[in-house]
Length: 67
Image 1 (tube, rainbow, N blue to C red):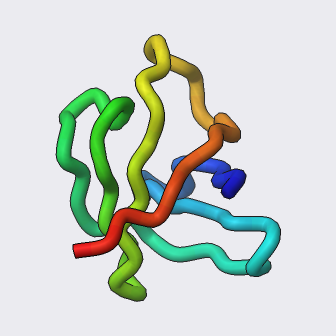
Image 2 (image 1 turned 45 degrees about the vertical axis):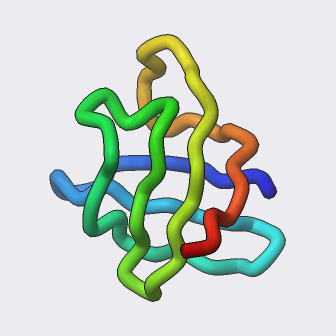
């Protein structure tokens, strides 16, 4: 699914247009964000692709990671 990662007021958030859902990111697996998973406040864990350092906002293809 497409996800847009952006920063607003020093808070990272993920917007998923297909669900019209925007949630704060509460933890990241990798410090550089890309190539690991992120945990959203609603409990969703998304796997992000490996990308070169990108300026935010950026839209990428992510997948839901099951526990």
